[in-house]
Amino acid sequence: MKIIDGKKVSIEVLDEIKSSVDNRVKNNLKIPHLAAILVGNDGPSKTYVNSKIKACERVGFKSSLFKYSDSISENDLIDEIQKINNNDDIDGFIVQLPLPKDINQEKILSQVDPYKDVDGFHPINYGKMALGIDTFLPATPAGIIELIERSKIQTAGKKCLVIGRSQIVGRPISILLSQNKIFGNATVTVAHSRTSNLEELCLESDLIISAIGKPEFIKGDMVKKGSTIIDVGITRVDDSSSHKGYRIAGDVDFNSVSSRVGFITPVPGGVGPMTIAMLLKNTLKACSLSD
Amino acid sequence: MKIIDGKKVSIEVLDEIKSSVDNRVKNNLKIPHLAAILVGNDGPSKTYVNSKIKACERVGFKSSLFKYSDSISENDLIDEIQKINNNDDIDGFIVQLPLPKDINQEKILSQVDPYKDVDGFHPINYGKMALGIDTFLPATPAGIIELIERSKIQTAGKKCLVIGRSQIVGRPISILLSQNKIFGNATVTVAHSRTSNLEELCLESDLIISAIGKPEFIKGDMVKKGSTIIDVGITRVDDSSSHKGYRIAGDVDFNSVSSRVGFITPVPGGVGPMTIAMLLKNTLKACSLSD
Image (cartoon, rainbow over all chains, first blue to last red; front, top):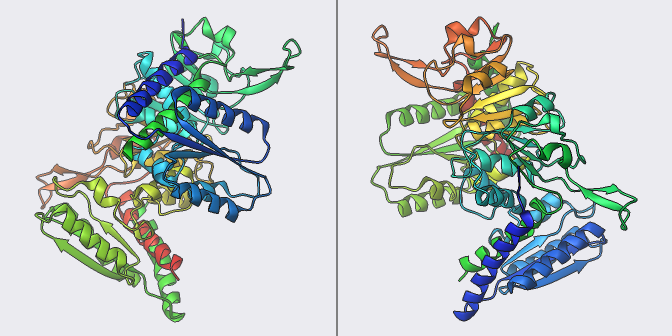
């Protein structure tokens, strides 16, 4: 069994980005600039946005944080997005999700300039992704592909099970892994809340990507020997033995699963750190495209 | 076993469209107008385009056919598309595929005004489809959903196998059937040329949608008893007993398969006629949206 060290791989990716930025500086090219929009006071959202800003500093990017109260109207938020769309110094930006309930997320995401849409959630970029056209891939699925690629895990002709059909993870990774690309060509099944035979499907799969947020749902007796397990779940679970009072749990029961499988990502330290690295990679791409 | 009569269902849909057009005429609303672009002299393409024009006449639509030589340049074709985009009388139009080899299909399809893109192949509409946002669904998958719906075939929680991952059929139908919609919620697997265990997958499936163009590939011993078989394959096969010298064959060996299954679409007369009906339904929608 080999643990896929997402922390380590993400540092490799960040170091590569930093080299590119250093080269850009040497060549008098523009320094990439990522902006984030944060609406309201959601704790985890603040943490994620801060991690993104910190990662920008690490690789030498400029970053900007635009914070709005959760009472901002949809129209005012759209105006703010238009300002960022028109700000030539900003190469890419994200709208941190979730948004307050009375703001239409679909409407907001479609306002982001597709050339600055480094999250890849604008319908035109999502469509390009589904059509196999070069675009900004959503960061989490892009991070999963990067982990698979750098771990040299073969996917062609393999049975792959994606658990969860979210727009952010399950749907795009299921499409990408079944496309005719080097780290694609898998026979992909998408399971979800209405799937009736999930344990059987898990047992048959060479590669499982789980993104359902059910702590330690996948047990050792549900996985195929020698298979690869990518755990995208991140759930806070009460834990009195931790000084924080909680711990972060994945969808996979690491203890019982890890001894049976070929490759496994831990939680934390697996897919999580890759997500930010891939967001920065998209921002570098956006910046390079406008050189 | 019940044969799903696509010809009959398509006539129902066309009659419904005709009623809507009659109502529009009564209310002095615009008559829907579909245009088709045909480049070159491909025989089947001419046949398809002519069928579309004929169907327009049947439901009371206006139609226009724009024919260009296969020596037209990419830029000139784009200019022609812009003219149609700017022609207020045309509600929707299609670019008949395939295009000549030296014309970039991806580039051409992205020039179509998304609000007139009744084939649903513009990346923004394809992205909306993948995101579950209301849009123009590509005609063949929309026709399959319509057949399933009108035949009252349950899909929720069922094992569904889509054979083929084309942008036009396999990819979109696999996404639609796994979305959280009434005629969705299936557990969908996408098989393709790199899939290693296709016969086993077929045998396990409650619903098979085959779109690979391999005549009579799926045999009776490959399907589950009582399952539903949707055959999207259309291949010309030499046949000296036919006066044309050929017959049209589906992906499914109808004789051996039909006796084992619950529902099956024939070829011809299954999915084929639905495709044109759904294209007209999209055109009616485009026209209504601009009322």
